[in-house]
Each structure stands twice: as C-alpha cells, then as structure tokens.
Length: 293
Image (spheres, rainbow, N blue to C red):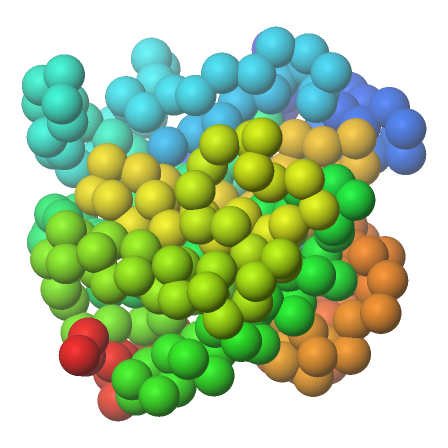
C-alpha cells in the first residue's frame, strides 16, 4: 500500500517514491514531488482557476506519454473541477487550486498545461503567448534575439512581455491582458508573428511547415486559440533531464550567448526563486494587464 501523507488536512497516497523517473541523472519520483512542494507558492498562481491538461509520463521520458484532459479515475472528491466545452462535447477538467491538489496531481508524474483563459471566463484570454521554437541549427540564442524584437514591438502597443524557457528547446513570451476574446487575441498574435517575419528576414518564420523552419525561429502564435494549451511555468518537462519551464529575466535573455545559459533543471529553481523571487509575478498585477489596440 502506498504511504499516506497529510497535506493541509487532506490525506494523499504517494506511491513509488524511490522510482527513478529520469535515468540519466537518477532523479526520482520522490525528488520530483519535493520539487513541486518547494515551488508551490510560485507555481500555483500559474494553475489556479484554469482547467489543467496533464501530459503524463509515469515511466519517465522514455516510456509512454499521454495527454489526459478529463478528470482521471480515482480523483479525490475534494479536488475542484470545472465543466469545459470542447469540440467533442462537454467534459470536466481538474483545477489545481491548492497544495493538496498539486501534490496529488504531481504523484501522477505529469507536465501541467493550461489554456490562456480561466474556467470562470471560457475563451476570454487574460494572457497572450508566443512559443518561440528554433529549427536546427538555430537554438535558444536565436529565440532570445526574436524575443527582444517582440518585446519592443509589444511595448509600442502598450503591452508588457515576460519570458520563460519552454523547458525544451525554446522560449515562451507571456503578456498579461484585460480579458479579451481568444479569437481576437489569436488574430493580433498572428499579425505580430507576420511582422516579426518581415522585420527579421532570414531568422523568423510564422508558418508551421517544417520545410520552412531550418535555421529559423518559428513564432508559434497558435496557442492563443481557446482550444490550445501551453506548458505552465515551473512545470518539469518530460525530457532526458528534469528540465523546467523556468521564468527568466530580460537581462538573461539579452545576455544569452550559448544555449546552455538558459537550461534549468529542477534542482536549480529553488535557488533562483530565493535570489530573484517569482519573475512572472507581474502577470497577476491588475495594473499591468494590457488592452489590445
């Protein structure tokens, strides 16, 4: 029987704590759960009130991976859920609103993905996202160049951008918004992606076709669609190492000289939080929320 742990008055079964999830580094499931407990104060605001999609990888990044949107079987009755309308009908999804729910979900061994809107305002985006995805031989260094261009372009429209690594190869930009129809946000983001391609010829592509992407940065604007999700800040990714989608400062973006400068694993994040605080805290300050032109 899995050991029971009490978290804020909720009893949670935590299983296989010694299981190695990341063979290359020996990082275990117990260490993964410890990481989430440590960063919970910064992670929970990124998840709270948003229907969460789980990318599960219970046997590690080399094992089976599968997306789970519906409430998993065996979900405790105290876990909050929300009704979500999707193209295939109406279902319920988990809301990771508190520490007990976070630890219960982390025990599933999962990445956390969220839409750009909250469950109480479906398809009304309170943030805009760009996913900057490099095509080899381009890497995150070129993504940083594109990110700075986009930050300056967004600023001309009175919008403030925040950056985080994807935890994979690229970079994410997030912009807090006064709630705005996802369709309108998508159209605005697509237009800026086109502008970036025109403004940085030879470096940026705004279309997804892989044949166009070698040596360039794909400015993926599609995750602003109401049906799409993005890996949440502070989530650990299903990669070879326990890399994290980590917030970064603009000084770090501007100073990135080699790809390794912006690779962070779970063991790095607590120290970064202690030194810098939550670099994405501004996303939740009402007076920073922008209005699309």
